[in-house]
Length: 171
Image 1 (cartoon, rainbow, N blue to C red):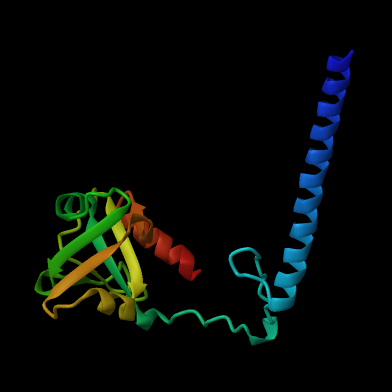
Image 2: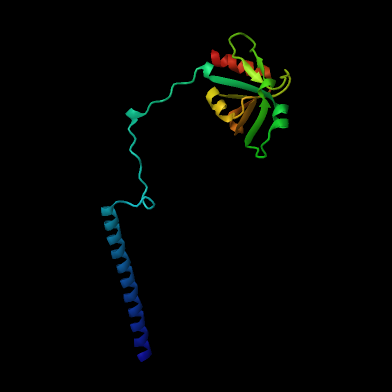
């Protein structure tokens, strides 16, 4: 019988100890929270959502065609000259003297530049970027350097498809 009372006393003691530990944790957590809120929130513990005032946001005007440059590469040239080992990136270097200016199929289509010959039956890769951005890539005045994600490029099955796309965008 004493063993049964001892077991009940031990169980009761464990229950009281467990409740005490939980009460101390709850009280301590409440005190710490109140103290930290008075002193200010810790950046690592609280996420603060910025209050955006939409009146101050000004959307940039689209760039004028004169501020953009269009570079056209044959698919084979890109594959041969891509210096990047990562398939998601394209890193190209070409001599600026090798760039040839090409006029579109009519006078209204923008001139583009290419470091290689573009055949009618070959797939092409097009990069349209702001001239200022391209200037940031280039450290040497005699070289054209492009180092950007492959997502910046547009792929066309032929140069004629590019011309059709440009004419549709003008309409």
